[in-house]
Image (cartoon, rainbow, N blue to C red; front, side, top):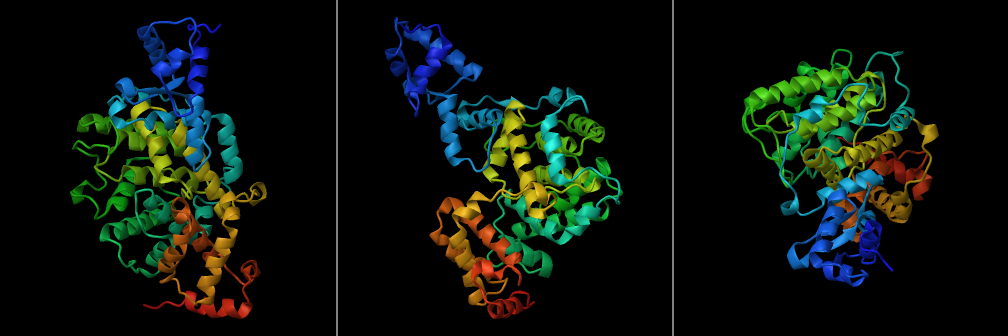
Length: 454
């Protein structure tokens, strides 16, 4: 006989309904019978404890177990999530009208004690250090970033802009940064955003031995990233004095200048004292967007600021390659509305792993085949062949690839295009056999591909 006081039994009853169970369906499985009001109270308590989630309102309300909800989430997840990250994902995936209004909690910042409080557990910090190369002062600050400068400039500019909804492709970004050529059909704001990233990245790398986590660096970084993009041009590089809102969120940032400025200084002071470069990087990814110290361009500022400790310590930078925009935003919503960092931490870990793989900073430790590339290997090969054999240049390749990608499932198109673009970037005489291309075909195409024309 099932006992209705046992929370595990109630969860198990709900778990029998993958799409969620109504109150009546749960009551049918309970023996002995209890009142509707008592069952509602116990289910509400399980929701509060995080064992169940509630979907809908009134008589349409259904309850779903965390186990079933996680299975549904995994079907669409683009990067692996920890159990804690999945719980945050579920919290921020609830309808906005059912989420409680959240304000800025100053204690979330104040209670953080550098080198005692940790957003990244020790095992993860050690893992990231192994991936990114040991922290070293053997060479001048920024040495490693300078070695991969051209590639980092394009990758970080493109990925950081992409996370803001920018529609430039990787190749269009490359052409803009190398030739100053605006992609056809793109608005000026998108073009300006990418060019601002270029200037900001150049600033971080060229001044690597002088920059630090201080007002000068962060304010000027914001000024470079927001140039010609703010309603009030004088707001670039200045702590805001106006209220701001967060789209699609119940979070309400601070709106008093004096308090914002105080918290900004405290944020910088705490960040300065963090000794581990990965913890320092992630702290900035968390706290800058949460405070929203600027009128706009806060997330971009945090992503580039996160690279400061990595660049200065000659560690592999993080270029946010393969990071899904939705998961990244959900990670921030977890911070904004619940002060939970676990989902954003999963995003950061994934982003850093992918960046290390891209720049081969730890080639010996990264050897697993990419599942996406494996599944689309024939389509990628055919796309590369088509670009080469039709002698398509860098300027016209993006439009051609968009046409090819129409045969790819919509959910995978953007990533497929990126893969082909990276294959084209890395194509050389030593790997053309992979695409069944002859040296003559490659040489003819290469002459067209690198040609600087209008």
